[in-house]
Image: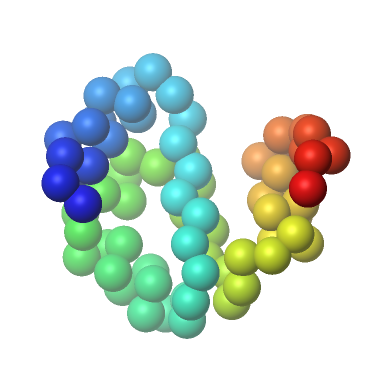
Length: 70
């Protein structure tokens, strides 16, 4: 997406970023590495499906508290 690569370093200076994506872990990690942007993320998580359980697990592992909104 246009402007993302330029915006991420600015955000990473001020925030702890998490990249959360779905798909085949090997393929998605390859794409993340090829982008050259992995170093900007404190955490990269690849899941097979983005569903409620995946988001809840991400919130637990990253120390966030789910709001309970569905």
